[in-house]
Picture 1 (tube, helix red, strand yellow):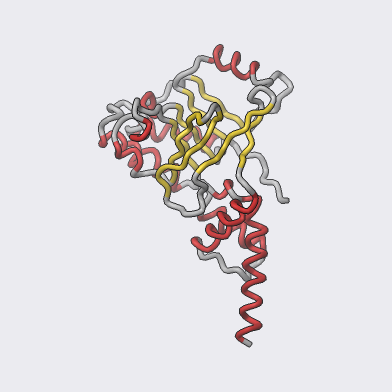
Picture 2 (cartoon, helix red, strand yellow):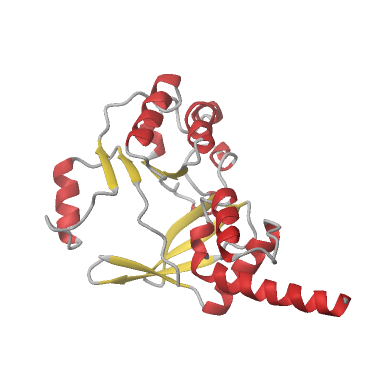
Length: 241
């Protein structure tokens, strides 16, 4: 199938020093020959709080400088000045940082620590769920690492993704059955109201423009789903004739 070119990522790590990061990457099998040119990693970044205008400008400037398609904030509580259990902190973060990145067409992933009660989701205010399209809860089920879907704005997101670890955590693979992926892709194209009669390239352009943050979940299957919808549309045209 069609392969998406590498994505430029800006990772803001507020928790690990460079020494610890080097130790972890080495343990995962990375070395001096690994091509990490698309990973722009800021360890303990000396930038202002992201719930303030100054910090928002700095992160947007950084994202533009490295042409980042995805910005990862690890973790939210350390990136903001306000208390994480204060709804105003989250609203200010969205007002100054998140909305500006979104307007520039960049995807944003925010990492939070879970509270003691996993059923309550991320630690802090419930307002954290108000400004995001999708929340995954990463946990262990029967000794296996699993992503469980929480709040979501789209119907095609799978309820659960099992993460299989290969070669000492060098690679993660998504364990979702092919039939389920096709169903997700069909739902995605229907929900985005993509014209089934357009070309594959035109379909990709629309999906990437309107669902950039999550279309990768089913991107390999979207081609198959579009072809299936096109065949059905042609059959309807014949019936109408």
